[in-house]
Length: 435
Ligand code: IMP
Image 1: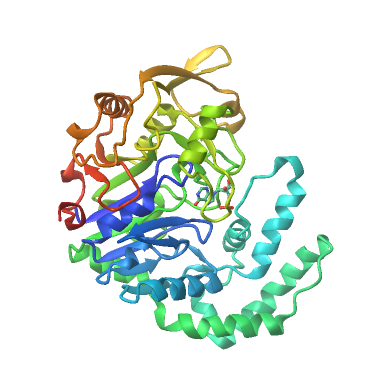
Image 2 (image 1 turned 45 degrees about the vertical axis):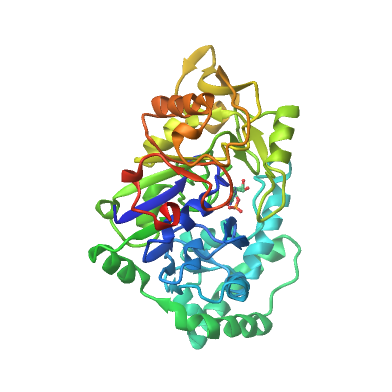
């Protein structure tokens, strides 16, 4: 199993960072393929807490080459701050390589993100305000500035001259002051000096590692239903956080992927606007939010909470051709007499078992629940499936059956070792868990 893709199976924030960190202990490369610093990965390693937004969290392992792939949009300031912050706490981190084909996020992208959100009024998407959408808009419109251009001073100035004409036209429609090239160029040229030594043809680096049979981890950000094509459009991010995105965003082909692990919580969360059939608006949701510290890593916003939705999960398994599920936060759901699980929806008088591609219809879907026995007690000490309460095991069995996907890993707490490897054959041998 030398190449593994890790994706979020719901709407992001499924605690992928921990799994990546555990698997990266035995990897030689960790590659991010989509998104930018809209992502927030919290990793607790040896009692220290790290928050990653752009850099693959695999970098915490010295032998890992961390790669920012071509499918990403990179805020240079954010990248350098994150690198400095990480090095200050963990000096012995791996190398970092940045694709020359990744796109640069500029301050005007962040400004436009905020202005576009304000203009949407009641139809706000609830973006992270990191300029992600506007940066991808520029990429698709073929006017984006790529990292290879950022690190070439003459080209950077020329590209900014071109782009700022268009951006200033856009900003003037919003009544905003125009951006002058001088200070922007100076600031970005400074970042470029530090980033230049990290820039590479990362597609070749990744392909070579894959050809050599090295363990390469493709680290997804966000989640399946935030995918631009497969998610709840327009309440999505502007990239492809699904397994297919690992090919598009790094320069490998589908046959180079050996396994896809989909990370999901034992319940469901989402931040930002958009349909969420199993959302809880009562004290149960509030309890899970508080108890599970369900607040955004990037924005600090309280996450929306809901019961586990197996319709969503089954759909995610198919969209990503998932080889295994990784179920997190089983400890947080502990303590209920009973829990609800959605197994289908009622829509316009009929029963459906899939996520409709029309987001408006999805918004009207009403979940049909199965009630299951809850589990009690502290499960954080469990290290084998058999250690879990019988009700928790029944819950996991039910998930497997409904999604036709085996549960590979169960996470019972935030620390590295608070993990149960149910099907080791779906991962590579992980010293971090067997030590
Ligand atoms: P954007 O990616 O900032 O444009 O935000 C678009 C939507 O994706 C919003 O609903 C965000 O809350 C959501 N989103 C973006 N990144 C993440 C993430 O890492 N976790 C969860 N939701 C995210």
